[in-house]
Each structure stands twice: as structure tokens, then as C-alpha cells.
Image (cartoon, rainbow, N blue to C red; front, side):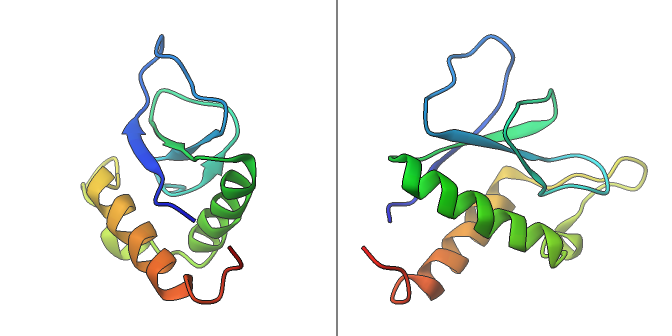
Length: 101
């Protein structure tokens, strides 16, 4: 599995076919979504199989409150794109030998 491309979503940009979104503001920061919203990151994968795997990895990270320790802001909490990149990178590196190629 290759590392995905993670970008900040902006309305009007072209959305690649194998993409999903992660909410980046509020108490639900890190929650994966199929449809974009104004406050999210876009994760583009190389295949549909990788997209499904990464979606559920991100879902597990959100359910386990992985990003709670990385929330910034006092009124509206948010996570930074580098936090998402490094979090996914560390999880994928730890599980790389467990994932079938």
C-alpha cells in the first residue's frame, strides 16, 4: 500500500475517483466521510482497495480518539494536516508487514 496524498479540500477542485475526506474541525476531528464538507482534508489513494482500507483505518483512529491529544485551539478545536499525515504514516508503517500486498 502506497502512502496516500493528503490535501486540504476546497470547493471547486477536482476530486479524484479513489478519495475520501476527514473532518478537521470540532470534537469529531478525524472522522472519515464519503462526501466533502468545508472543513475537511481530502485523502486520495491509488486504488479503490487502498481507499477502503485507509477509510477503515481512519475510522478506527477516530473511534479510538487518536486525534484528541493533537487538538489545537481553545474555542474551535482543529487538527493540522501534518498531524494527519504523520499519524497515518506511523500507523501504516507499523502495520505494513501485516497488510497483504
